[in-house]
Length: 163
Image 1 (cartoon, rainbow, N blue to C red):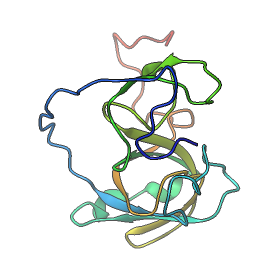
Image 2 (tube, rainbow, N blue to C red):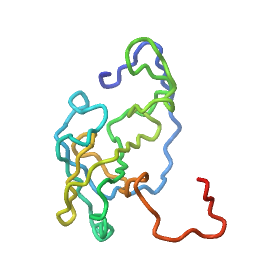
Image 3 (cartoon, helix red, strand yellow):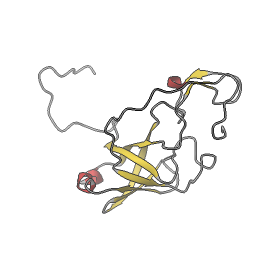
Image 4 (tube, rainbow, N blue to C red):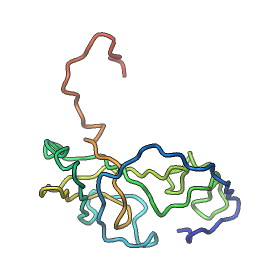
Protein backbone atom coordinates (compact mmCIF):
# COMPACT_ATOMS: atom_id res chain seq x y z
CA UNK A 1 0.00 0.00 0.00
CA UNK A 2 1.31 3.41 -0.93
CA UNK A 3 2.12 5.84 1.82
CA UNK A 4 0.28 9.13 1.86
CA UNK A 5 1.51 11.43 -0.94
CA UNK A 6 4.18 8.94 -2.05
CA UNK A 7 5.07 8.85 -5.74
CA UNK A 8 6.33 5.45 -6.92
CA UNK A 9 8.73 4.89 -9.79
CA UNK A 10 6.99 5.61 -13.08
CA UNK A 11 4.04 7.43 -11.56
CA UNK A 12 3.15 10.87 -12.89
CA UNK A 13 1.22 13.60 -11.14
CA UNK A 14 -0.28 16.70 -12.71
CA UNK A 15 -1.54 20.00 -11.41
CA UNK A 16 -5.29 19.58 -11.54
CA UNK A 17 -7.44 22.40 -12.86
CA UNK A 18 -9.33 24.47 -10.33
CA UNK A 19 -12.39 22.67 -9.01
CA UNK A 20 -15.80 23.80 -10.13
CA UNK A 21 -18.90 23.24 -8.08
CA UNK A 22 -20.99 20.38 -9.42
CA UNK A 23 -23.58 20.97 -6.73
CA UNK A 24 -22.76 17.72 -4.95
CA UNK A 25 -24.52 17.29 -1.59
CA UNK A 26 -23.50 14.48 0.74
CA UNK A 27 -26.58 12.57 1.88
CA UNK A 28 -25.00 10.75 4.80
CA UNK A 29 -21.89 9.41 6.46
CA UNK A 30 -20.40 5.90 6.47
CA UNK A 31 -19.17 4.30 9.69
CA UNK A 32 -16.60 1.51 9.36
CA UNK A 33 -13.98 -0.06 11.65
CA UNK A 34 -11.11 1.42 9.59
CA UNK A 35 -9.54 4.75 10.47
CA UNK A 36 -6.54 4.72 8.11
CA UNK A 37 -5.87 3.40 4.60
CA UNK A 38 -3.37 0.73 5.56
CA UNK A 39 -5.98 -0.99 7.74
CA UNK A 40 -8.83 -0.87 5.20
CA UNK A 41 -9.40 -3.79 2.83
CA UNK A 42 -8.59 -3.26 -0.86
CA UNK A 43 -12.05 -4.49 -1.87
CA UNK A 44 -15.15 -5.00 0.20
CA UNK A 45 -16.35 -8.53 0.97
CA UNK A 46 -19.94 -9.59 1.54
CA UNK A 47 -18.74 -11.51 4.63
CA UNK A 48 -16.86 -8.45 5.91
CA UNK A 49 -17.63 -6.70 9.18
CA UNK A 50 -20.92 -4.88 9.65
CA UNK A 51 -20.70 -1.20 8.73
CA UNK A 52 -23.28 1.54 9.13
CA UNK A 53 -24.58 4.06 6.66
CA UNK A 54 -26.14 7.06 8.41
CA UNK A 55 -28.57 9.02 6.24
CA UNK A 56 -28.95 12.75 6.92
CA UNK A 57 -32.21 14.70 6.97
CA UNK A 58 -34.00 15.53 4.73
CA UNK A 59 -33.04 12.32 2.87
CA UNK A 60 -34.28 9.75 5.42
CA UNK A 61 -37.69 9.55 3.72
CA UNK A 62 -35.89 8.47 0.51
CA UNK A 63 -35.08 5.15 2.25
CA UNK A 64 -38.73 4.07 1.92
CA UNK A 65 -38.81 0.65 0.17
CA UNK A 66 -35.07 0.01 0.43
CA UNK A 67 -35.74 -3.04 2.64
CA UNK A 68 -37.01 -4.85 -0.48
CA UNK A 69 -33.45 -5.20 -1.76
CA UNK A 70 -30.78 -7.60 -0.55
CA UNK A 71 -27.94 -5.72 -2.21
CA UNK A 72 -27.30 -2.01 -2.70
CA UNK A 73 -24.83 0.00 -4.71
CA UNK A 74 -23.16 2.57 -2.47
CA UNK A 75 -21.40 5.60 -3.97
CA UNK A 76 -19.11 7.54 -1.70
CA UNK A 77 -16.57 10.37 -1.80
CA UNK A 78 -13.01 9.25 -1.05
CA UNK A 79 -12.32 12.52 0.76
CA UNK A 80 -8.76 11.67 1.83
CA UNK A 81 -7.56 10.53 -1.61
CA UNK A 82 -5.10 12.49 -3.66
CA UNK A 83 -6.43 13.61 -7.01
CA UNK A 84 -3.37 14.38 -9.12
CA UNK A 85 -1.96 11.09 -10.47
CA UNK A 86 -2.52 10.27 -14.14
CA UNK A 87 -0.12 7.28 -14.18
CA UNK A 88 0.04 4.87 -11.25
CA UNK A 89 2.02 1.82 -10.22
CA UNK A 90 -0.33 0.11 -7.78
CA UNK A 91 1.70 -3.06 -7.30
CA UNK A 92 5.07 -1.33 -6.78
CA UNK A 93 6.46 -3.74 -9.37
CA UNK A 94 7.32 -1.13 -11.98
CA UNK A 95 4.14 -1.73 -13.99
CA UNK A 96 2.50 1.60 -14.74
CA UNK A 97 -1.06 2.15 -15.94
CA UNK A 98 -3.32 5.11 -16.44
CA UNK A 99 -5.61 6.06 -13.60
CA UNK A 100 -8.72 5.24 -15.66
CA UNK A 101 -7.43 1.68 -16.16
CA UNK A 102 -7.35 1.09 -12.40
CA UNK A 103 -9.77 0.87 -9.47
CA UNK A 104 -7.38 2.90 -7.34
CA UNK A 105 -8.91 5.45 -4.94
CA UNK A 106 -6.52 8.04 -6.43
CA UNK A 107 -8.70 9.72 -9.09
CA UNK A 108 -9.50 13.21 -10.37
CA UNK A 109 -12.97 12.84 -8.82
CA UNK A 110 -12.51 10.22 -6.10
CA UNK A 111 -15.88 8.50 -6.16
CA UNK A 112 -15.86 4.99 -4.71
CA UNK A 113 -18.47 2.32 -5.31
CA UNK A 114 -19.30 -0.91 -3.55
CA UNK A 115 -22.04 -3.48 -3.90
CA UNK A 116 -23.06 -4.28 -0.33
CA UNK A 117 -25.34 -6.74 1.41
CA UNK A 118 -28.14 -4.98 3.29
CA UNK A 119 -28.32 -6.58 6.75
CA UNK A 120 -30.98 -4.35 8.32
CA UNK A 121 -32.44 -0.88 8.52
CA UNK A 122 -33.10 0.96 11.77
CA UNK A 123 -34.61 4.36 11.01
CA UNK A 124 -31.97 6.45 9.23
CA UNK A 125 -29.21 3.83 9.68
CA UNK A 126 -28.49 0.93 7.34
CA UNK A 127 -26.29 -1.93 8.52
CA UNK A 128 -24.42 -3.40 5.55
CA UNK A 129 -21.55 -5.73 4.75
CA UNK A 130 -19.10 -5.30 1.88
CA UNK A 131 -17.61 -1.84 2.32
CA UNK A 132 -13.94 -0.95 1.99
CA UNK A 133 -13.86 2.76 2.89
CA UNK A 134 -12.65 4.66 5.94
CA UNK A 135 -14.76 5.63 8.93
CA UNK A 136 -16.41 8.99 8.34
CA UNK A 137 -16.49 8.70 4.53
CA UNK A 138 -19.14 11.01 3.01
CA UNK A 139 -22.03 9.24 1.24
CA UNK A 140 -22.90 10.42 -2.29
CA UNK A 141 -25.77 8.07 -3.22
CA UNK A 142 -27.50 4.70 -2.71
CA UNK A 143 -29.18 2.58 -5.38
CA UNK A 144 -30.55 -0.93 -5.68
CA UNK A 145 -27.83 -3.19 -7.12
CA UNK A 146 -27.92 -2.52 -10.86
CA UNK A 147 -27.53 -6.21 -11.70
CA UNK A 148 -30.53 -7.27 -9.59
CA UNK A 149 -32.78 -4.29 -10.23
CA UNK A 150 -35.86 -4.95 -12.34
CA UNK A 151 -37.57 -1.79 -13.59
CA UNK A 152 -41.16 -1.47 -12.44
CA UNK A 153 -42.43 0.08 -15.70
CA UNK A 154 -43.30 -2.15 -18.65
CA UNK A 155 -41.23 -1.76 -21.85
CA UNK A 156 -42.08 1.36 -23.82
CA UNK A 157 -41.90 1.99 -27.59
CA UNK A 158 -38.34 2.97 -28.42
CA UNK A 159 -36.78 1.02 -25.53
CA UNK A 160 -33.74 -0.90 -26.68
CA UNK A 161 -34.72 -4.46 -25.88
CA UNK A 162 -31.27 -5.81 -26.84
CA UNK A 163 -29.47 -3.89 -24.12
